[in-house]
Length: 219
Length: 131
Image 1 (cartoon, one colour):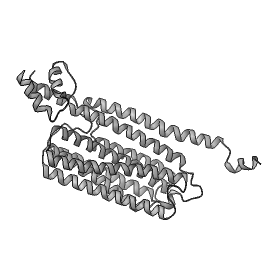
Image 2 (cartoon, each protein chain N blue to C red):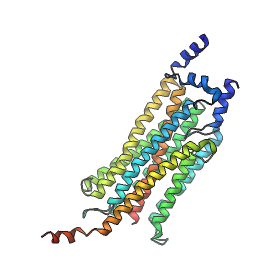
Image 3 (tube, chains in turn red, purple):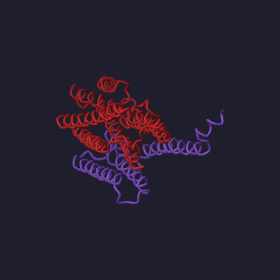
Protein backbone atom coordinates (compact mmCIF):
# COMPACT_ATOMS: atom_id res chain seq x y z
CA UNK A 1 0.00 0.00 0.00
CA UNK A 2 2.83 2.36 0.85
CA UNK A 3 4.29 1.57 -2.53
CA UNK A 4 1.06 2.49 -4.32
CA UNK A 5 0.66 5.69 -2.32
CA UNK A 6 4.19 6.69 -3.12
CA UNK A 7 3.71 5.97 -6.77
CA UNK A 8 0.54 8.03 -6.80
CA UNK A 9 2.35 10.87 -5.09
CA UNK A 10 5.17 10.66 -7.64
CA UNK A 11 2.78 10.72 -10.59
CA UNK A 12 0.50 13.30 -9.01
CA UNK A 13 2.37 16.20 -10.50
CA UNK A 14 2.53 15.03 -14.12
CA UNK A 15 -0.70 13.08 -13.94
CA UNK A 16 -3.24 14.96 -11.85
CA UNK A 17 -6.11 12.56 -12.57
CA UNK A 18 -4.11 9.44 -11.65
CA UNK A 19 -4.91 7.83 -14.99
CA UNK A 20 -1.63 5.99 -14.98
CA UNK A 21 -2.41 4.30 -11.69
CA UNK A 22 -5.78 3.31 -13.10
CA UNK A 23 -4.10 1.85 -16.15
CA UNK A 24 -1.63 -0.19 -14.20
CA UNK A 25 -4.37 -1.87 -12.21
CA UNK A 26 -6.34 -2.83 -15.32
CA UNK A 27 -3.56 -3.62 -17.77
CA UNK A 28 -3.89 -7.35 -17.18
CA UNK A 29 -7.06 -7.38 -19.26
CA UNK A 30 -6.19 -4.77 -21.89
CA UNK A 31 -7.31 -1.65 -20.08
CA UNK A 32 -7.31 1.87 -21.50
CA UNK A 33 -4.61 2.81 -24.00
CA UNK A 34 -1.66 4.96 -22.83
CA UNK A 35 -2.65 8.51 -22.11
CA UNK A 36 -0.74 10.08 -24.99
CA UNK A 37 -2.60 7.86 -27.46
CA UNK A 38 -5.95 8.91 -26.04
CA UNK A 39 -4.94 12.60 -25.93
CA UNK A 40 -3.66 12.68 -29.50
CA UNK A 41 -6.68 10.77 -30.79
CA UNK A 42 -9.01 13.28 -29.12
CA UNK A 43 -7.01 16.14 -30.60
CA UNK A 44 -7.14 14.47 -34.02
CA UNK A 45 -10.95 14.43 -33.76
CA UNK A 46 -10.88 18.15 -32.86
CA UNK A 47 -8.70 18.83 -35.92
CA UNK A 48 -11.12 16.95 -38.15
CA UNK A 49 -14.00 19.03 -36.79
CA UNK A 50 -11.93 22.13 -37.50
CA UNK A 51 -11.44 20.92 -41.07
CA UNK A 52 -15.21 20.41 -41.35
CA UNK A 53 -15.68 24.02 -40.23
CA UNK A 54 -13.26 25.16 -42.92
CA UNK A 55 -15.15 23.08 -45.47
CA UNK A 56 -18.26 25.20 -44.67
CA UNK A 57 -16.28 28.37 -45.46
CA UNK A 58 -15.01 26.72 -48.66
CA UNK A 59 -18.59 25.86 -49.62
CA UNK A 60 -19.68 29.46 -49.00
CA UNK A 61 -16.75 30.70 -51.08
CA UNK A 62 -17.57 28.28 -53.91
CA UNK A 63 -21.21 29.36 -53.94
CA UNK A 64 -20.42 33.10 -53.83
CA UNK A 65 -17.50 32.98 -56.27
CA UNK A 66 -19.40 34.71 -59.07
CA UNK A 67 -21.25 37.25 -56.89
CA UNK A 68 -18.86 40.16 -57.35
CA UNK A 69 -21.64 42.82 -57.50
CA UNK A 70 -19.83 44.58 -60.32
CA UNK A 71 -16.65 44.72 -58.23
CA UNK A 72 -13.25 43.19 -58.94
CA UNK A 73 -12.92 39.42 -59.32
CA UNK A 74 -10.17 37.23 -57.92
CA UNK A 75 -8.16 37.21 -61.14
CA UNK A 76 -7.87 41.03 -60.99
CA UNK A 77 -6.90 41.12 -57.31
CA UNK A 78 -4.59 38.25 -56.44
CA UNK A 79 -0.82 38.63 -56.47
CA UNK A 80 0.49 35.10 -57.01
CA UNK A 81 4.10 35.99 -56.18
CA UNK A 82 3.04 37.02 -52.69
CA UNK A 83 1.04 33.79 -52.32
CA UNK A 84 4.04 31.72 -53.43
CA UNK A 85 6.22 33.30 -50.73
CA UNK A 86 3.49 32.73 -48.11
CA UNK A 87 3.28 29.09 -49.18
CA UNK A 88 7.05 28.68 -48.93
CA UNK A 89 7.01 30.10 -45.39
CA UNK A 90 4.31 27.69 -44.24
CA UNK A 91 5.88 24.63 -45.89
CA UNK A 92 9.29 25.33 -44.34
CA UNK A 93 7.70 26.03 -40.95
CA UNK A 94 5.95 22.65 -41.14
CA UNK A 95 9.34 21.04 -41.75
CA UNK A 96 11.03 22.85 -38.86
CA UNK A 97 8.07 21.92 -36.65
CA UNK A 98 8.84 18.29 -37.55
CA UNK A 99 12.48 18.88 -36.58
CA UNK A 100 11.29 20.27 -33.24
CA UNK A 101 9.28 17.10 -32.53
CA UNK A 102 12.31 14.93 -33.34
CA UNK A 103 14.45 17.07 -31.02
CA UNK A 104 11.82 16.77 -28.30
CA UNK A 105 11.75 12.97 -28.68
CA UNK A 106 15.52 12.72 -28.25
CA UNK A 107 15.31 15.31 -25.41
CA UNK A 108 17.64 17.84 -27.03
CA UNK A 109 16.63 21.22 -25.60
CA UNK A 110 18.90 23.39 -27.75
CA UNK A 111 17.78 21.95 -31.10
CA UNK A 112 14.18 21.95 -29.90
CA UNK A 113 14.21 25.65 -28.99
CA UNK A 114 16.04 26.53 -32.21
CA UNK A 115 13.60 24.62 -34.44
CA UNK A 116 10.60 26.05 -32.60
CA UNK A 117 11.99 29.59 -32.91
CA UNK A 118 12.50 29.16 -36.67
CA UNK A 119 8.96 27.76 -36.95
CA UNK A 120 7.60 30.80 -35.12
CA UNK A 121 9.56 33.28 -37.24
CA UNK A 122 8.35 31.64 -40.47
CA UNK A 123 4.78 31.72 -39.14
CA UNK A 124 5.17 35.42 -38.35
CA UNK A 125 6.50 36.07 -41.88
CA UNK A 126 3.42 34.35 -43.27
CA UNK A 127 1.13 36.46 -41.07
CA UNK A 128 2.92 39.70 -41.99
CA UNK A 129 2.56 38.95 -45.72
CA UNK A 130 -1.11 38.12 -45.29
CA UNK A 131 -1.85 41.27 -43.26
CA UNK A 132 -0.05 43.34 -45.91
CA UNK A 133 -2.11 41.68 -48.65
CA UNK A 134 -5.38 42.36 -46.77
CA UNK A 135 -4.44 45.99 -46.08
CA UNK A 136 -3.55 46.43 -49.76
CA UNK A 137 -6.92 44.99 -50.86
CA UNK A 138 -8.85 47.22 -48.45
CA UNK A 139 -6.95 50.32 -49.57
CA UNK A 140 -7.83 49.51 -53.19
CA UNK A 141 -11.54 49.52 -52.28
CA UNK A 142 -11.78 45.72 -52.31
CA UNK A 143 -12.53 45.20 -48.61
CA UNK A 144 -14.88 42.56 -47.23
CA UNK A 145 -17.87 44.92 -47.57
CA UNK A 146 -17.42 45.37 -51.34
CA UNK A 147 -19.18 42.20 -52.54
CA UNK A 148 -20.40 38.79 -51.38
CA UNK A 149 -17.38 37.25 -53.12
CA UNK A 150 -14.95 39.40 -51.13
CA UNK A 151 -16.83 38.73 -47.85
CA UNK A 152 -16.42 34.99 -48.44
CA UNK A 153 -12.76 35.44 -49.41
CA UNK A 154 -11.87 37.46 -46.30
CA UNK A 155 -13.78 35.05 -44.04
CA UNK A 156 -12.06 31.96 -45.42
CA UNK A 157 -8.50 33.27 -45.64
CA UNK A 158 -8.85 35.39 -42.48
CA UNK A 159 -10.04 32.36 -40.50
CA UNK A 160 -6.90 30.48 -41.53
CA UNK A 161 -4.84 33.55 -40.53
CA UNK A 162 -6.52 33.54 -37.11
CA UNK A 163 -5.62 29.87 -36.71
CA UNK A 164 -1.98 30.65 -37.54
CA UNK A 165 -1.98 33.49 -34.97
CA UNK A 166 -3.37 31.15 -32.32
CA UNK A 167 -0.77 28.58 -33.37
CA UNK A 168 2.06 31.09 -32.85
CA UNK A 169 0.77 31.94 -29.36
CA UNK A 170 0.64 28.22 -28.59
CA UNK A 171 4.16 27.78 -30.00
CA UNK A 172 5.55 30.50 -27.69
CA UNK A 173 3.75 28.87 -24.75
CA UNK A 174 5.32 25.50 -25.58
CA UNK A 175 8.80 27.05 -25.83
CA UNK A 176 8.32 28.67 -22.42
CA UNK A 177 6.93 25.48 -20.86
CA UNK A 178 9.86 23.38 -22.04
CA UNK A 179 12.26 26.09 -20.86
CA UNK A 180 10.67 26.21 -17.42
CA UNK A 181 9.69 22.58 -16.84
CA UNK A 182 11.67 20.43 -19.29
CA UNK A 183 10.35 17.49 -21.30
CA UNK A 184 7.80 16.18 -18.81
CA UNK A 185 5.27 13.58 -19.99
CA UNK A 186 2.34 16.01 -20.00
CA UNK A 187 4.35 18.66 -21.84
CA UNK A 188 5.37 16.11 -24.47
CA UNK A 189 1.70 15.31 -25.01
CA UNK A 190 0.99 19.02 -25.56
CA UNK A 191 3.88 19.15 -28.01
CA UNK A 192 2.41 16.22 -29.95
CA UNK A 193 -0.91 18.09 -30.18
CA UNK A 194 0.81 21.32 -31.21
CA UNK A 195 2.69 19.55 -34.02
CA UNK A 196 -0.56 18.01 -35.26
CA UNK A 197 -2.24 21.44 -35.19
CA UNK A 198 0.58 23.12 -37.11
CA UNK A 199 0.72 20.42 -39.81
CA UNK A 200 -3.08 20.50 -40.17
CA UNK A 201 -2.92 24.28 -40.77
CA UNK A 202 -0.56 23.57 -43.64
CA UNK A 203 -3.04 21.12 -45.17
CA UNK A 204 -5.77 23.78 -45.03
CA UNK A 205 -3.41 26.30 -46.63
CA UNK A 206 -2.79 23.84 -49.51
CA UNK A 207 -6.54 23.83 -50.14
CA UNK A 208 -6.70 27.63 -49.90
CA UNK A 209 -3.86 28.42 -52.29
CA UNK A 210 -5.08 25.84 -54.81
CA UNK A 211 -8.79 26.63 -54.73
CA UNK A 212 -8.84 30.34 -53.92
CA UNK A 213 -5.69 31.78 -55.45
CA UNK A 214 -4.61 29.47 -58.29
CA UNK A 215 -8.07 28.44 -59.52
CA UNK A 216 -9.26 32.02 -58.92
CA UNK A 217 -6.56 33.46 -61.18
CA UNK A 218 -6.69 30.68 -63.77
CA UNK A 219 -10.44 30.89 -64.42
CA UNK B 1 3.62 -10.24 -17.92
CA UNK B 2 5.76 -7.71 -16.14
CA UNK B 3 4.88 -4.05 -16.17
CA UNK B 4 7.69 -3.31 -18.57
CA UNK B 5 6.51 -5.94 -21.02
CA UNK B 6 2.95 -4.68 -20.84
CA UNK B 7 4.17 -1.20 -21.55
CA UNK B 8 6.17 -2.35 -24.57
CA UNK B 9 3.19 -4.38 -25.78
CA UNK B 10 1.06 -1.24 -25.76
CA UNK B 11 3.78 0.77 -27.42
CA UNK B 12 3.70 -1.63 -30.36
CA UNK B 13 -0.06 -2.00 -30.43
CA UNK B 14 -1.18 1.61 -30.58
CA UNK B 15 -0.06 4.69 -32.44
CA UNK B 16 -1.40 8.14 -31.79
CA UNK B 17 -1.96 10.40 -34.79
CA UNK B 18 1.38 12.09 -35.37
CA UNK B 19 3.21 9.17 -33.83
CA UNK B 20 5.98 7.24 -35.43
CA UNK B 21 7.32 3.85 -34.57
CA UNK B 22 11.01 4.73 -34.58
CA UNK B 23 12.76 6.84 -32.03
CA UNK B 24 15.97 7.07 -34.06
CA UNK B 25 16.73 10.47 -35.56
CA UNK B 26 18.04 9.42 -39.00
CA UNK B 27 15.01 7.72 -40.59
CA UNK B 28 12.60 10.31 -39.14
CA UNK B 29 14.68 13.17 -40.52
CA UNK B 30 14.69 11.46 -43.92
CA UNK B 31 10.90 11.11 -43.70
CA UNK B 32 10.43 14.85 -43.09
CA UNK B 33 12.92 15.67 -45.86
CA UNK B 34 11.05 13.48 -48.36
CA UNK B 35 7.78 15.13 -47.30
CA UNK B 36 9.26 18.61 -47.71
CA UNK B 37 10.76 17.74 -51.12
CA UNK B 38 7.54 16.23 -52.44
CA UNK B 39 5.38 19.10 -51.24
CA UNK B 40 7.75 21.72 -52.70
CA UNK B 41 7.67 19.82 -56.01
CA UNK B 42 3.87 19.63 -56.03
CA UNK B 43 3.49 23.30 -55.02
CA UNK B 44 5.90 24.44 -57.72
CA UNK B 45 4.00 22.37 -60.30
CA UNK B 46 0.70 23.91 -59.18
CA UNK B 47 2.02 27.46 -59.47
CA UNK B 48 3.62 26.68 -62.83
CA UNK B 49 0.47 25.11 -64.28
CA UNK B 50 -1.78 27.96 -63.09
CA UNK B 51 0.17 30.53 -65.10
CA UNK B 52 1.19 28.61 -68.20
CA UNK B 53 -0.14 28.53 -71.75
CA UNK B 54 1.63 25.26 -72.50
CA UNK B 55 -1.27 22.98 -71.56
CA UNK B 56 -4.85 22.78 -72.77
CA UNK B 57 -6.65 25.49 -70.76
CA UNK B 58 -9.76 23.52 -69.61
CA UNK B 59 -7.49 20.88 -68.05
CA UNK B 60 -5.94 23.39 -65.64
CA UNK B 61 -8.65 23.29 -62.92
CA UNK B 62 -8.60 19.47 -62.93
CA UNK B 63 -4.81 19.40 -62.76
CA UNK B 64 -4.79 21.89 -59.86
CA UNK B 65 -7.38 19.83 -57.95
CA UNK B 66 -5.42 16.60 -58.44
CA UNK B 67 -2.15 18.27 -57.38
CA UNK B 68 -3.81 19.74 -54.27
CA UNK B 69 -5.24 16.37 -53.23
CA UNK B 70 -1.86 14.71 -53.84
CA UNK B 71 -0.14 17.31 -51.69
CA UNK B 72 -2.65 16.87 -48.86
CA UNK B 73 -1.91 13.14 -49.05
CA UNK B 74 1.83 13.83 -48.80
CA UNK B 75 1.25 16.01 -45.72
CA UNK B 76 -0.95 13.38 -44.07
CA UNK B 77 1.60 10.60 -44.60
CA UNK B 78 4.93 12.36 -44.04
CA UNK B 79 4.01 15.09 -41.52
CA UNK B 80 0.94 13.79 -39.66
CA UNK B 81 2.03 10.13 -40.01
CA UNK B 82 -1.44 8.80 -40.78
CA UNK B 83 -0.80 5.42 -42.41
CA UNK B 84 -2.85 2.41 -43.39
CA UNK B 85 -1.19 0.11 -40.85
CA UNK B 86 -3.42 -1.93 -38.52
CA UNK B 87 -2.29 0.17 -35.53
CA UNK B 88 -3.65 3.30 -37.17
CA UNK B 89 -7.19 2.10 -37.88
CA UNK B 90 -8.93 4.46 -35.44
CA UNK B 91 -7.20 7.52 -36.87
CA UNK B 92 -7.94 6.51 -40.46
CA UNK B 93 -11.60 5.83 -39.68
CA UNK B 94 -11.98 9.26 -38.08
CA UNK B 95 -10.28 10.82 -41.11
CA UNK B 96 -12.59 8.94 -43.49
CA UNK B 97 -15.65 10.19 -41.60
CA UNK B 98 -14.30 13.75 -41.65
CA UNK B 99 -13.71 13.52 -45.40
CA UNK B 100 -17.26 12.25 -45.91
CA UNK B 101 -18.67 15.30 -44.10
CA UNK B 102 -16.35 17.66 -46.01
CA UNK B 103 -17.42 16.13 -49.31
CA UNK B 104 -21.14 16.36 -48.40
CA UNK B 105 -20.90 19.99 -47.25
CA UNK B 106 -18.80 21.31 -50.15
CA UNK B 107 -20.19 19.15 -52.95
CA UNK B 108 -23.78 19.40 -51.73
CA UNK B 109 -23.74 23.19 -51.32
CA UNK B 110 -22.19 23.89 -54.70
CA UNK B 111 -24.41 21.36 -56.49
CA UNK B 112 -27.66 22.63 -54.93
CA UNK B 113 -26.84 26.31 -55.34
CA UNK B 114 -25.82 25.85 -58.98
CA UNK B 115 -29.09 24.01 -59.56
CA UNK B 116 -31.09 26.82 -57.94
CA UNK B 117 -29.27 29.49 -59.95
CA UNK B 118 -30.12 27.53 -63.07
CA UNK B 119 -33.81 27.22 -62.21
CA UNK B 120 -34.36 30.79 -61.03
CA UNK B 121 -34.95 33.73 -63.28
CA UNK B 122 -32.30 36.40 -63.31
CA UNK B 123 -32.87 39.48 -61.15
CA UNK B 124 -33.13 41.79 -64.17
CA UNK B 125 -35.93 39.65 -65.55
CA UNK B 126 -37.85 39.65 -62.26
CA UNK B 127 -37.63 43.41 -61.68
CA UNK B 128 -39.74 44.52 -64.70
CA UNK B 129 -42.42 41.94 -63.84
CA UNK B 130 -43.05 43.57 -60.48
CA UNK B 131 -44.23 46.79 -62.07
